[in-house]
Image (cartoon, rainbow, N blue to C red):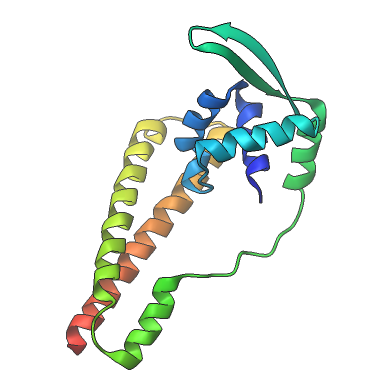
Length: 177
């Protein structure tokens, strides 16, 4: 996947300026495909050069503001990409290597990383649960909403699993010491 596909998707939902898009991105796609505002602006330029989006400049209170929208070629590129089949990404996590080292070193130096990650996963889990309550509680969902909820459920399960893994690893390390 690339940032360009995530941006095309966001612009298909709602055309907008780079700043509007970056703010929306931070609250949605950014949970599973993070990007800085600078990366977003740079990619918007590339998409425009490739003829996949167009911008319209408007005078605003802060100067000229470009509003981006997806062109038919951009929609076609996104449809082609969505139909592709990919292998799952390889797992690459420094913590897992540290735990393997811990098995030999046995000095509990990985505990701080585990505690740090546990706190991060618990916070993200709480944030996702708040989104779930706000956006998906007690209401019928259409197909698009159901797919968005599926993404959120994936995030919920991932964060819960990672938090549980950290707790279990900490418990095992503490038993051994």
